[in-house]
Length: 164
Image (tube, rainbow, N blue to C red; front, side, top):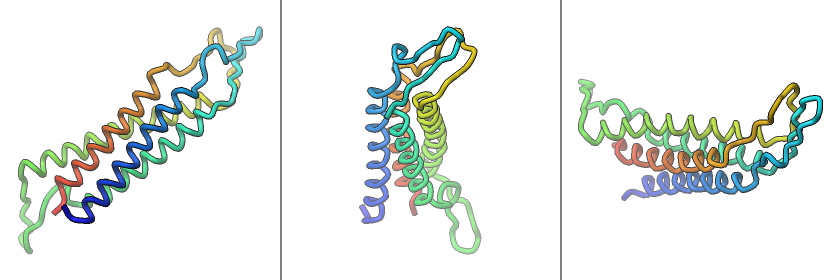
């Protein structure tokens, strides 16, 4: 493999893995239901948690991984121009690379959204007029972590498939 392919694949893979690890660690630090105070006036008081910062860093790390994979792929996702005739050259490798690129954006959006919502719910805040207090499910951050790995794998595979 070329050095550029190894470098891009290594960087995107490392950032995706780092995002996943941060997501799993954030899950262990998340606010549990027993830590939220429900006052008699119906206010939910959420304590500060390091899961908020971990989730933000995981989201930003995943963002960089996705942007690097997409930028490295360039415009090769749709067609390959031959000479001045600009013929579109489609083949199985390009189609699978295009599908991987599109699916990686969907998995990225899901993981990024979960990480950001986890950061919001794990920050110190107060909600008024609640009958019960919401906390993240124990599976939310691990789902985002797994989606981070899938995003990185799809980003690398689309880059490798679509490079010229």
